[in-house]
Length: 320
Image (tube, rainbow, N blue to C red; front, side):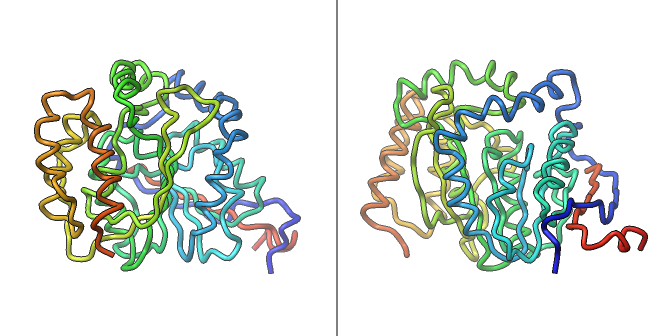
């Protein structure tokens, strides 16, 4: 049995070289952003995000892979009986802080220097994939969602907490206006991303969904959605390979495509969405309203490097 009162030690390290995207967060702002990340999120964590993390991560089971682990804010909330915990983080400044967080947690974990677009995992090898505030930051969310489908075992689950495009047309319009400056500030984060629509169009069924507000944070990132999703067996993604725009016009197109292949019946959604492409600022909020209505109605039930820490059991084992 592991002695959880001792600090963790480096147990093994393996490296491979095969980046699909340029190194993340390597510049001066990337290093500064990693340093201020926890303080910037501190008020939001106290105002309810910690509780969301705790409730969501309690559902993790078996071999669990977290995407974009950041500074390790999720670590305290994973169940102790996981078969294995793997955390992928491509940004070196974030990963440095993640490694320290793992040591402090006395938890067994493997850290991967890997982008979510290309995961060094075998097909069907993971029971749970975790994404908290990650899908808004990737350049190719469609590729990432395809990777999640690939590595999940049949019956495996995606657990997610993401800030999303607002239902309010007024706030959504401001998200569109501020998307570029916010993305530069927040190291790639897109504040106007209709993430749940992307998840569903990528071949997932959202089983449980909770909407809320990320209190104590800027208004453009306050709308939150958390939930669980499973793969729709036999249904491939309805998203085109190059789809990566989170804006309302793209969302309208994605939902029209998804409606043709989804197992769910969404009454009149396709007809209602079509004219909204002409009015981008209102599109996503109207789409979200149709989705909520439908749910109440008809619904069918890299340089890749890994570092593993394990709690120290005795001084004698350090030499082995």
